[in-house]
Each structure stands twice: as structure tokens, then as C-alpha cells.
Image 1 (cartoon, rainbow, N blue to C red):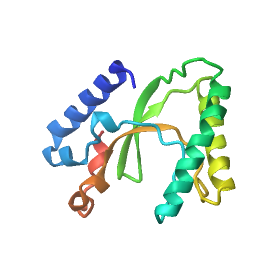
Image 2 (cartoon, one colour):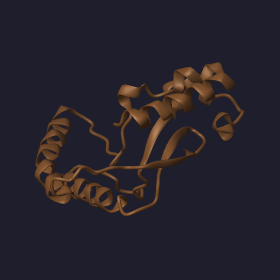
Image 3 (cartoon, helix red, strand yellow):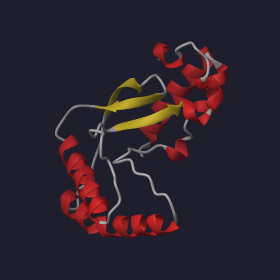
Length: 149
């Protein structure tokens, strides 16, 4: 993750906290910023081990997709999922194509191993900076906390 992107997200998080200090607990730490390629549920140690194996198998496929090039992902704008998750949107452009290919390859690899992954959701690349699930007491409040970002 580039220093420039991390700095921008920290500025955004601080601006949100200035508006509502309780939201500080919902912020993702800068060491945990990532792009989610797919969502899955691993229910036991055996499934976790299968998942690790699938990740290890993915490496050469990802290297082939990238062909030794660095994948540079520009971000632009913010949005929410169900007013529970705040995220920075990936800007439109050709850089999305290899990311989509990586996500599809990951999904296929996990499914071939018997792990249901990314079943019902379309891939929407984003960088999460805030999750109300990190502070469950905030989810119970009736007001829409993320509508003002």
C-alpha cells in the first residue's frame, strides 16, 4: 500500500472522527488496509488448511497475470455498503482488468478445493476504512452514521 494512499485514508478517518468521536472504534488500522478479492467462511482448522493450500497455489497464477508488472490501483471517491461499511472506491480504468482476473482465479481455485467463496456477490473492488461491526454498540443506534461521509 502506498504511503500516499495510506495518508489520504488517515486524513479521511480523522475528518470523520472529528464529526463523531465514537466512530474512532470503527476505523480500520492502517496496517490492515486491503482490497478484498473474495469472501468465504472457513469453519474449522481443516478448512483453514485447505484455504492456505489454495492461496499457495494461487501465487504462480497471479504472477502469470501480472507478468512481472506492478499493479497500480488508483482510488477515487468514497461510498458505503448498507451504511455499515465505509470504503474508498477504485477508480475506473484498465487497471481493473488484471484485478478482476486475479479475483476470478482466486474464486475458482477455492471452489475447486470445495470452499464456497464469492458465491452470491459480484466483485466490487474497494478499500475498507471503517466497519461498524468493529464497534457493535454503534450499529444499534438508529441514526445513519455513515451517510455524512
